[in-house]
Length: 179
Image 1 (tube, rainbow, N blue to C red):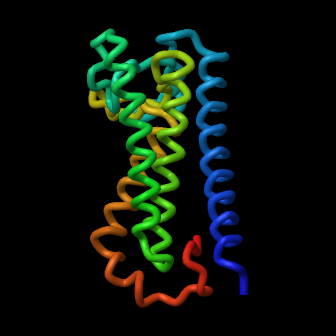
Image 2 (image 1 turned 90 degrees about the vertical axis):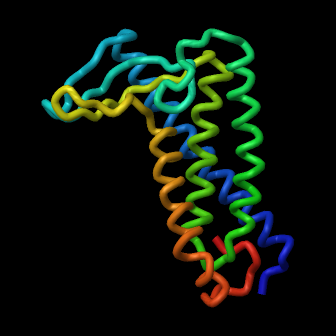
């Protein structure tokens, strides 16, 4: 049986590697778009449904507050992300080891937050490049980090609503931080 302290270090190391890998993948995909397209340019992938575009977003999700050019908005987004990271650690720890989907959700959201935080700190905006639409109706452009956050939120909601009561009943290998 592993010593609990060693298990915690192992778990934190794995989580840090996963978050880092996903944030690097997010940065890599944004870099590809920035290198291959000019700002505002698009490339049709699936006619009538999906394009790769190169746009920037100084605002929050879906362009909220993107028209406001203020250092305080930028600092507010940065501060919010840092507070959210603390909340995600608390959420992760609140899920019993048997509710792995909830823990995966917290890691996904954290990875997406880190990916977009890197953009905000380095550039002052987030690069978005995935555009889904049907005819004239389109979803706001997004990126891999946004996808991680969105899917993570859905997984977390599902875990909170449907799995939390079941988590204590599931068997684990006995370690507190079973991933």
